[in-house]
Length: 180
Image (cartoon, rainbow, N blue to C red; front, side):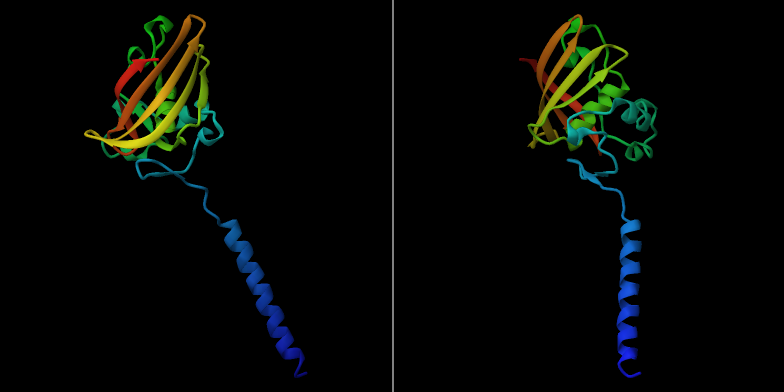
């Protein structure tokens, strides 16, 4: 009986440890994607795999101008604000950036890896986008990122170098753009 009691205690301890291990694995939080702004985002919308999921990101963002100040930090994704299509691509394409395009571009600037291209297609306009961000850097306006943008439609193609600077948590504003 003396040898059985320690063995029983060891077996019970091992079983308890195994159960705790299973519980901790089951309660594992979702991965977080650290952004340049310091926000840890719960989704990357495929950015790290090189493709922005426009459908998913469009359901998580709303028009920035409709957000109250308290809601701006509760968006599901970063966003490019204040830029027009003429700022970013040649007017010959003839299409506007919609909320999904702005969100994809903002998310690439926020969590995209320097030198890694991210692509997406806007099925409504027929425009294919490719964005390659550079490393973030400090400017007078704060934290900024340069990026290359290629936009292709059946009406033409446009290549640009541009810089966007952070204007709030996960909000990026175009500061300049030039043709390649």
